[in-house]
Picture 1 (cartoon, rainbow, N blue to C red):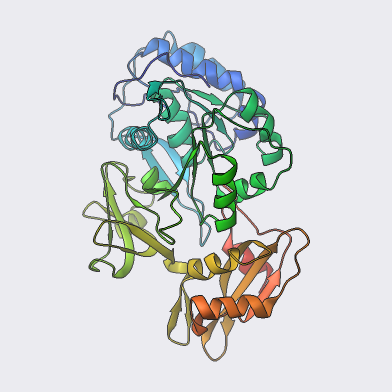
Picture 2 (cartoon, rainbow, N blue to C red; picture 1 turned 180 degrees about the vertical axis):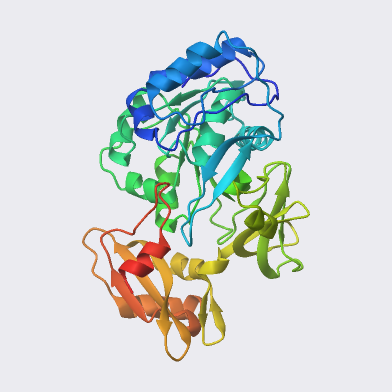
Length: 426
């Protein structure tokens, strides 16, 4: 997808393609999306726009909409009107449908541009075109804000591959001289273990989020792509992408960085360093959920979005995420934050990744269970893994059950689906 030939001024989006059921079609026919954007850019040169009816399901419909848009009257929406209804990940519960507005989407894309210095090669300080490879589902908020919209804002190019697997991505990454890559840690972990990866001298930034990054994967990426800046970005569909960002720094384990431009983060009513539910406020926050005023009112209070994440905000503004509030394991009165245990397990020799979840316990209420994916040739040593957790987190967090699995269940955006994990491995 190619954007207009220069940076765009801030302006409302005119419309948006409904991508929920058309992802495979977009992968098979990438030029169609380019045509949509090009038509919109010609008609409204000062605005980024993709115009399509909300019920579109096929490329023929989308292309007809693009052709019609070239001769249509300008239909400007208010910048606070919804342009996309986007399903959330639903990794710990039932997915909801969050509303994406023009103002919030443009703000999120601009914040990415400022954070990453899009359009400029930081190594030389000179202007340089951006090219991103879309390996995230196009209907995910990460792809929509950090890639398709951000590239349009800086006149960049979005390459849409037919196959988004890590193995298949090696070729387009090199052939298209991709400068910007956005992926979940699981995708990057598989990519980092691939043999015969060609050098990628054009790659300037790698961003990831949605889950903790395994220490080994981060180290491998930093080693193999020493000219690239790695950023851990955290947020939700309801924040239109990232709310915090941290450039890779081994000296700050557990931190996810500080709030991005125009965003505030607090830990409920807790003071500096205190633990509470993380809340976000800013122009990036969704106005609520589709046809669900009750849930919208419950999570949005005085402009603050309750994220459902438990964490802490230090006096210097740095944020730590300890886990989802629904994912905290209550073991005999003690709280076990799954992220802390997962970080220890995924850093153990022979472990590629790990997921920690609760199982029922007749005495303590809940007990800790862990599923680990082993590296090639490694053998499960449950006793050693329990010893590591006891030493680094505490006895209350030691997993009662430890199992090796071939792969962890994931949703469409690549996040670990703990609801399925609990159902499949009681």
